[in-house]
Length: 438
Ligand code: NAD
Image 1 (tube, protein in one colour):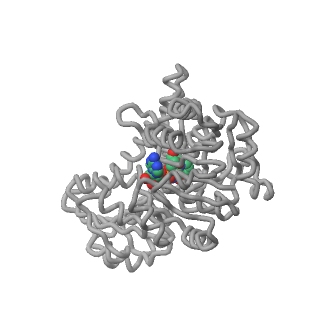
Image 2: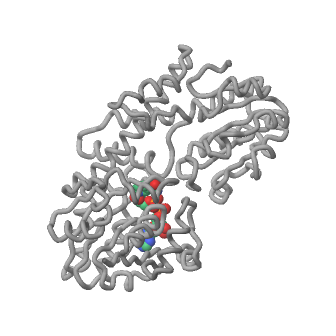
Image 3: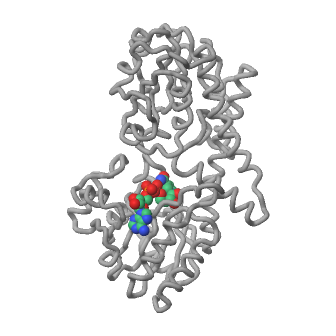
């Protein structure tokens, strides 16, 4: 089959590459000439493990190409996927649909033969019908169907998630669209991946409900962690004890500095907004959004206490600024709240991140960047672990401690223990929801 993919971000690029690996002919389109230039040179504009190899393989096989021009991509295409951003609209929390609608209009003006217009971007309930209206208004003669196909991949494990998904969700209202979608996902049918074929509204809702549920789970354990600190319990033990219950499961039960990233913050806000607009407010999610902000604030208070109530004049080493390991994505990362509070409080902040530097340099002014945790720790009064990259999980804590001016460790991802820190000579160790003493 022939597929056009609009948007070569984390979702569009991974989906385009994986569809070409299924054997389809895929043309990826983006408005950003820098991205298309790099892709045409065989460079990947994002960090996603394994993507470079798969991209090269399918470009060489002649099934995958990149262009700024929509017309050749749509020529003879069975389906066009919209995988553009849907960030939070300034001011009201609603998803900004301007990129999706602009793409829909461009498709309407460019497509010729029958085509299925598939929305892969995360969009509020009703958006696929609006896409159809927009297309119809811009080109009443175009023969098309719409389909909703929200994406569930996780950055950092995106290829595996796409190739071996827990499920694929497809919302359609015509047999013709259903047929094209089942042709596109045929390799996954053959691998017995569950395919949920449903109506447009349910497909749109599944994505928001799933993300809001996961954000709630993280927020739940973060609040339990705060209580654990008060009562002397260990949240890691609590998570383990809870997670072994099959009805609960152990995923997304790790206490930390608050959820972030390109999806949970914006999708929870958008869902809350959809609820308000339909006079069915989801107060649970409204609370989750608020609590997550409180969690980040609590981290700043924790660090301030460690520094004797003021960051002024302190040298602080921060390990990790991306919102999670194995990505270069900094969107809504907790570091974007925490690091500016340190800098604003008068600290000298020294940062290390295996992939976060290029975005981080723009988003975190006033910090200095270092190549490794040992260099960053030099002369520091506090070491803060903010993102649990593998590189930070097996540090020589004794060596780090030896380089620091004052031996304080704030482990906001619970990757070490009070015993590890004490053995390495740290005087102070704090983590999330666990006793501070060995
Ligand atoms: P992104 O910002 O990384 O990429 C969007 C791309 O679309 C950009 O390269 C931009 O230049 C391009 N674009 C915008 N308008 C265009 C147009 N008219 N024509 C051609 N290109 C255009 O976004 P992303 O992280 O890939 O997210 C895309 C959608 O997928 C969002 O709705 C997001 O919520 C959803 N999603 C993201 C993830 C994730 O982990 N990032 C996971 C699941 C779902």
